[in-house]
Image (cartoon, rainbow, N blue to C red; front, side, top):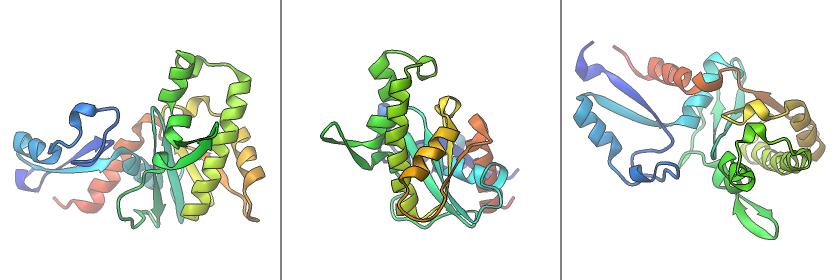
Amino acid sequence: LNGSKFFLIFLSIFSQSLLAQNLKDFENKEIKRDLEKILKCQVILENDAVLGGLGEAYFGSGKNLFTFCYLTFGTGIGGVKIFKGRVAENIFGFEPGHSYLIFKNNFLEVEKILGGKNIERKFKNKTEIIKDKNFWNKYYDILSIFLVNVAIFWSVDKIIIGGGLINIFDFRKLNYFVNQKFPLPIKIKIIKSRLKDKRALYGGLAYCTKRVKF
């Protein structure tokens, strides 16, 4: 391949100079410029949730859907709205995990309530081995409020969920909680990601084939 036409898709949770809560050493660094200098090719930085959403749109649970929202639940919470197979137009990307809910009489960012990092800090244990039913029922109650907000603000009736926490989510219960709360006469579908840990790689493939011509 001609090096001048080769694009590297760098899977990341940040753009070249934004915040990266789990990678503090990378914050406000010129990542794109440095990688292009090292690799001697053009580098495209993209948010991992965006690539996950594109992966689901072309190869996973979102294939053939007109529009949907993709959310990823891991240490934090990311997301993207997909419309007609493309990332919906936006001003500063999509950061649903940084929206706010009132929790115990305080305004807190959603990912600080529902993110895996917060759960593990609370129980001092890995999320997959936490069996406290009361906790998980309360968690689904709060999570369903967040998902209702996402559906209303982003005007979608299908939400695909991926990330490290999906293997412990009860999707039947989650669909029940969300539709019990949803205030409009529309059924919301909460769907499990099909692509698992490869979703962003598939998204990179979709991104690359749509954007790059060798």
